[in-house]
Length: 406
Image (tube, rainbow, N blue to C red):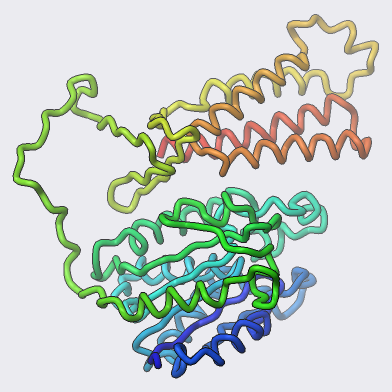
């Protein structure tokens, strides 16, 4: 017997009905007798609304605030709440939590005792990204947030990690809630690197993006996994409201600052870590050492590569539209060789992996795929295709440079 409410949040192009097979299992479980299941649904149409429509597709902020209203009204009397999300539903939940803490309403979240996220695209989804763009889904308020390394999603995740997952207690702007994050073992829509992201203790359970919700699928353990976390977290002592406690000290004197840093920086050894979160106040950044050897974030990690990219773009722009015979007459030093492009791209990939690991590699790999698609389609002339490729990669490097320099 358990006196708790399980809130289910579905994903993109879906509805609360996607949970029915799991709901049947949970309702039949004697250990979960008394648990109420509350489906949270929201509109998620496959296509953007047509121009001049009187109805628009709600974006993440809209849905997060709708969830906030439901939390304060329909769920007002639920003292112990667990939340399980699938796919985009995890991003919706994170936006709701980030919005609540930013509004100084973190104490209201103390009723949420457990969160389980299944196959959440924390780092975006590469699946059919070029097709989604071709079909105009960049204009879809929800689909646009599924792009790899979406800035708004990343900012929300930083807030959740800092003020929810890694919070020390409960106050107006922090509320510690246990998060249990899982990737699907055979999921090719949201891969493990994206689903697990920087969440501590993230793991994998059986299933692809859809069979992860099917208790009849071979090896499926989703119902048991969610049940385990709900029972354990609801039974655990509730986080006590109050000021966030200061870090404990050992009573030993602080070590002297390393003179090599001139007292202005800290040298942090993250050997053996999968990721590192660092920041001050509301500014928070995640570092993912690719080889777990405790590398540093360099303020100008991509600056020279961006400059080289702009140089190549400038040269390519002067060559655009020239005929083959005209190109042959241009001196080699004024052109962009295949070797120069490859060395530049390879060095960019190496540095991106050094700082961000596999989570950002996919973005550069995607540009290669898009370039190959352009070549195979015969779209534009060769110089234009190469120019487009360089612009795309420079744009990615500039975005990542802003992150490491923040």
